[in-house]
Length: 240
Image 1 (tube, rainbow, N blue to C red):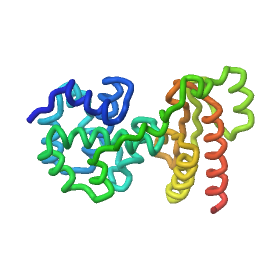
Image 2: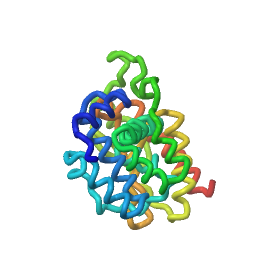
Image 3: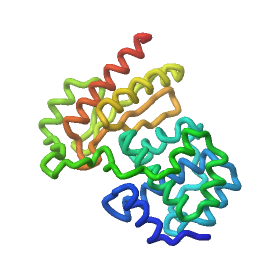
Image 4: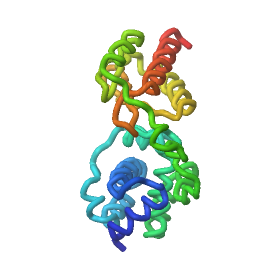
């Protein structure tokens, strides 16, 4: 059975308490792309057959990041969507539970190919609001930094550059030092409830990009995350 587009995205919006059908569509695309790396060819064919056309046709089915291990599923989706870890979990559960509601046969086929830590995400996220939204009002939203504020702040950071829309730092380390660095950064992200985008290069380099998604700009929270990433890099570089 091919799921109906509007019914599907409306379900994801409701389950994930998202702002719009477009946010649900974009999130579903990224979740399915990450999922497609972790299942077999038959399951990918079923997904392609049964997803609504407006979603299916936007998915990069042949793209492979090279990081398709099951235990990195949430991390992968977080990077693709630029969401904090807990907000990513909420989005994934909204998408996969709606998929289960629409097509239980497909959901069962997918879950049979995945470990328990992923299959548990096929359940509904429940009634609590997404972690980044909570009950805060508009006045509680972080304030975007002005250009001069950011320029001053960058002088106190290690090798960060960018503009008021995003700042980045590229770190060159032997690949065997990547796992301890990423573990430290993940712990910081959990603590701050804020997430950096990480791009892995081909020459022992990692590029961290930070911005505050809710305001599409750099805020004090991004500066704090950048400082903490600097600390993690220094610790790992010294053998910690």
